[in-house]
Structure formats: C-alpha cells, structure tokens
Image (cartoon, rainbow over all chains, first blue to last red):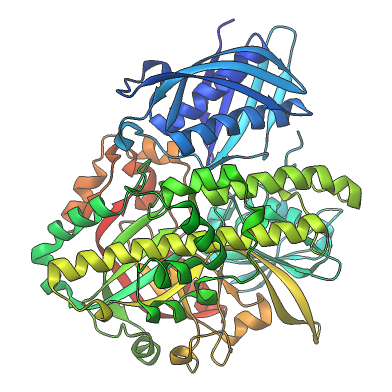
Length: 144
Length: 489
C-alpha cells in the first residue's frame, strides 16, 4: 500500500490525513503534508533555489500522539528559525518514547518561495495515530 | 486521542432568551459547571449549525473554577478546544488557566492608526504607498531585514511597545497610552520564554505572518456615533486610516506549545481531566500556572512590540510619501484578542478576582473605567473589529452591558464560515485580485493563489456581528471603515 497525505476541510485552520504501511512512513507523510501547507505544493516536487541541507532529528514523546507532535513541531521550528524546508525523511526509529530521523531539504532562498500558508503550530485537537497491521493512519489539525 | 464528541443534538437543547441571546443549559453535557451563552442573530445562528463551535462552548463550561457562563461572541466559529470568539472567566483563587483559552498566537490583535489625509488626497499615490508598505512590512514567510539583537529581544519581552519606542526609537511616546495595557504587561517573565521561542521570534519582529493577518489602508465610510468618533479622532467621512492585524509570531506559538506540553503532564497531579486535550489547564495559582502567565505576558509584550514596529514602518511610509509630520499619524487604539487577563469583576453581586480568557475576543470596557486612556474615558474603550479584506471593518465602543454580562468582552472580527478548501473550490477560476481591483482595492501579497481563502465568501459579514453586539448592549458601533489597499500574508 502506498503512503500519502491529504489536506482536509476545517473552518479556521487546516487538517491533514496521512497514511502509510508503517508508522515511520506515515510520520514522513505527515511531515510532507505539513510542508505542502507551507509551500502550497508537494515538497518533493518543490523547486527551491536555496542551499540543500541535511538535518538530524531526535525527539521524544510518551505516546504516539505526543511523539508525532514533537516530530512535526521540531521541523516547524527549523522552518521558522532557519528557513529549512523538509523534502524527504528517513526515519530509523519511530515508536514511543523516541524518534530518530535524517531529514533532507533546502533552505528558503527567498520568502516568496513559500507559496502556501504559514503554520503556527501543531495542535492536539482531534489528533489521531491509528496503528493497524498493514497501515498507520494519522489525523492532525494545524493552527494557521 | 479523544475528540469533542457530541452527546446529543444541541439544537433541541438551546434555549432562545431574546433576539440575540441563546442559552445552552448545563444539562446539555454531564460535566458542564455553568451554562453556555451565545450571542447571535438568526442569520449568525444558522451558520453556527455548520461546525462544532457550540460543542466547544459546552466543553469550555467544564473548566474547573469557571464562573458565570461560557460565552460565545457573534463571530464564533470552531477552533481547536476553545471556540474562536470565546470568553471564559475562572476564579483566580481555585480555578484554572488554560493556554488554549488564549491561543497559540498570544496577543494576536489589532491596531488602528489615523491620519489627517482624506481619500482623494491619497488615491493618486495609493499604488506607491502600497508598494512601499509591501517592501517595509514583510508578510508570508518574510523575515525582517535586521533581526533584533539579543539585548533588544530581552527588552521587548520585558517592556513590549515601551522598549520599541523608548530604546529603539520606533514610534512616539504618545503612542503608548493608546495601547491596551500601555503596550506592556509588567507581569512578564522573559526568563520563562525558551531559547526556541526566541530563535523563532528574532527574525520575525516587524512582520505580519500569513493567514488572516494584514495591514490595510482604509477610509472612514460612515460615522454612526459622531460624539465617540470625534473623541477617537476619526469623525470625518473619507478620512484615511491604517489597520494592522498580527500577533506574537513564532515566539508566541512556541511559548503556547511549550506550556501546553507541560500542562498536559501536570494536569493529572491536580486531578483535572478535560474533554479535549487542547483545553489542558492547571490551577491559576499553581507554579506552572503562574509560569505560564509570566511567559504569556512576555509573548504579549513581543506582539505589542511587533505591532509597534509595523506601525513605525507605516508612519515612515506616510511621512515620506505625503510629507506629513509624524505626530499627525496617531494611534487610535491597539487591542488584543488572544489573551488571559487577571481582572476584578462582579459575579453574583460579589467582586472577585478572575482570570478572563479571551480567545478571538476583545476587551470592551465602558465609559468611566480607569484603564481607558484619559481622552476616551467619557466615551468608552475603542473596540476594533476587522472585516474580511473586501468588506468593511468597524470601530465600536464598549458599553456597560459588556461589564454586566461578558466580563467586559466583545467580538474580534468577522469570523470564518468556510474552510480554506471550501473557499478555494467555491471561487475556482475567480481572480480575487481582479475582483478587488474592480472595487478600487489594491492588494499586495506574496501569494495571489491563496487570496480566495480570504475572500468575503469565507467570512461572516462583520456588519451582522457588530449589529448583534449593539443589539445585545455589549458595544456600540462608532465608525465603519472600508478598504483602499491591503497587504496580505
């Protein structure tokens, strides 16, 4: 089963569904979805002109939900503070209490390259990480 | 993770009290400690049926120590946890503080500047003005050209707009009196703002962000209360003003997230459970509660410094292009609409110290209140109500009814009715920029494609919202403003 993400309707904010066969895959799709909101386009297809870079990420979370929030918030922090846009991720550990990943992407060369909506935060509202035998499904709402 | 599940259809339980008041009885949901009260006319009530905001009002009513009612302003719409347009007051003595009742964007708010110019004087150079503003006020992912020094970050966290004016020279001393709380909460504790929050905030001071944030050049379209309008200095039809809507940027977002995480851990210690994790809370008097209030105040100061910095850029552009003396561009007022404030209010005939959460709601104090600037004390506190970018915004004034019923609170804006996706679908193929241009409105944005998400169809009519406020006796409409040019994120 292929992984993916989809932006969902929400009155004032944006919700995201993400899925893949494994938790690591679904967490990756959720990250791509978050950057799709910011860029206005799929991050894998985004043509950024800035310097490419790698980022090592290590976060903690006692539950699947808090681990997901920690993962996405970490990427959001690097975007806000440094202009780093994540385009692909290799997550080698993805289970409470830890997540380790190597993320590749680019720094924004110019603010206008981010053609979507800025994400203020990852919320706990309606947050779901559903683990199945063949599939992990995620639902998360972002404050914009 | 839990969601806000509906226990039963609120439509059958809601009791209409009068033309603009609806009560949600405590019996609607088992853990409600107080009823809910929703201010809405018939048109606004119909829109309420489309999302979960009423359920969220019921959830807020479960907060420990809540007094009076869980309130919903006429612009209410679904948030995450707290509805947007919600007011909840808890007893300081034994009630809770909930960061979700403030929002991620701590001290998101609105500032209104007035000028001595009339529309016909501005029109010939409006394009030039909008270009200058779009250069000087970064929006979207834009960062400031010169980030704050570490010393100045400390300064704005401690002293907000006061630091901006007195130490960085970005503004006039007269600005400060016209800002809610003087643009600085002295309860701020910058040492509680994390390094992460500072790193996010440093490059973002003086910037708008995106979503529904904006800087808008407006003209007075209608004067509805000439006495109040004269007190506020905006009594001339055609008079040009500038409205700024933004908040504490990444710094505030990080502070909120930091404390939500801590509170989720701490709640169990106090035996508190909430129907939605975004309602995470602890007693006001607990160490974490007090630390949140200190960090929140620092983030609030950052937001006032941000609006001050943007106002400075507006003043500079206007003085350069129109040759005005700087002091002729004055702050009418600056209000917060995401904040928790410790205030004294009468509840059941007894004066109590309360923690008033206003989430997408604005303080609205009436005439005579000591916290209102001296020049406005006979009239009341200005309440700034931005409309969507194609339609009118309003300046209102607080009425005694607000102190009696809503802990001195009113609405904050038009309130969304459509999701971003729904708005984009509805307006596929429509050039919003062209539509605005036809109405004589210039829009500058780094992201034309996203304009549909902010189009008028996505919002309630602010006129309805302020009309409801007026009928309810919470705030009186003073002036209607219409857009001439918009900088959008």
